[in-house]
Structures are given as structure tokens and as C-alpha cells.
Image (tube, rainbow, N blue to C red):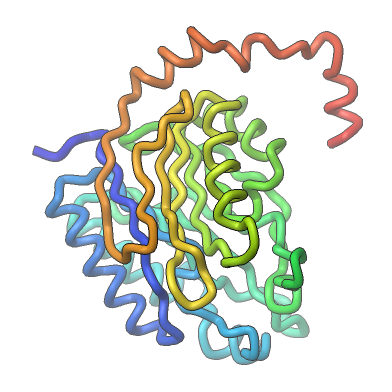
Length: 278
């Protein structure tokens, strides 16, 4: 019998071949279901690794798809066949024909096979020598948390995690699990930043945080799951593959009652500052 609160975390090294990555993804979905997981979470750039030298037009024309394209459609069928929820990530075509940049998009697929949420990455990684905005176009909406069998899931993507206001907005709108598909680039202090922020976003919101990451190529690995009190339940290091973690929904209520950070906010003092800032 499947554990209703079992999460499968995939740490993968996406190749430049979309077809190869799709086959690998379907295999991971089947494995997650066989191991009794209720939901399987993939990293950012699941669809393909885009080398720095790859022109935006090549990514847009040769790799990216619309959400209802073949890549997600195949994953929807796999989710339905295996009766498992899926969180996937794609390069989504931009409907502006004059702009070859694409969206960096996360998609929630229910176990019945239908899409229940589509989130386009808000914060592009134009930092530390990188310029994602050369190939990617940012989204403009924080999507509402979506109900799954493991809890109410709020979506962010990678660099979004450096902006704590986003995870707080998702939490006050009902998220008790934050899922952050990522492709965290290697570099000086980068793994320390990664681990610190994964833990901080979980602790400050009293939420589980699930962060599947790319490994290899230029990425750091270290896919993690952290509980609402900051306890690290999973750190995959540089291992490729899939790991299963149990989510205890009662733990969310327990932590939020004993460490009532959301309740103890002084909105009477700084509500206007928050509104002015936003």
C-alpha cells in the first residue's frame, strides 16, 4: 500500500537530448511508484541541459515546448498510468514570435494525469557572472499553492529561494510544503548558500522544503528535504538517482504551534512597510 505522504526526490544529470531526458523521467516516475511514493519531484532543467554557448534561438526552436506539448503530455500519461503526482520542469515556448527567450516553468501533474498548476520562474539568475535573461524570460505571477496528497504545495524555482518574501507569500496563502526544482550552479560558497537557504526557508515558514537539484555538468547536486523545524531529512550529495522521504503532516502543525513564527509577526507595526515594499 502506498504511503500517502511519501515523496520521491530525483537528482539527475540532464543531457542535451530532450528525448533521452524524457525517457529517463518516465523511468523515474515508474520507479517512484514502485517504491510506493505519492509524489515525485524533478529538478529544474529536467527537459535538457542548455550549454552556455547554446544560442537562445536554438533553445527556443529545438528544445522548448508549450505546456501542452509532447514532453508534458508524456509525463501526464506516465503519472496517470502509475497513479502518482508529478512535479516537472520544462523550457516553455514564449508566444511572442519576436522574442526567442523561453520561460523556465514548473508543472504540477495530478495522479489522474491532469495539470493542476503551471508556475513560470519569477527571478532570473542574473548574478555571479551569469545572465539567465539572455535565454529566459521571467514570469509575473506567484501561483497559489495547489492541493496534493502530501499537502498544499507552493512552487518556487532555484534562484527564487534567495528572495524570502516569495516563500512567505506562498506560506500565508496556504502552502505547508515548498517545492523548489533547482539547477544550483557550482562555485565559491555556493553549496553553503544552498544548504543555508534551504534550511532557512523551511524554518522561517514552518514548512517542509523539498529541493530536487541537478548534478554534474555545472551543477552542485545536494538535493535536500528539510522538515519545518530545520531538520535535514535528505541530502543526496553528488549521487544521481531517486530517494524516498516520508512527510509527516502532523509535524507541520506541531512546529507551527510550538514555534509560532507566522502568528507572532507584528503586522500591526510593519504591514504598511510590507505593502509599500511590494
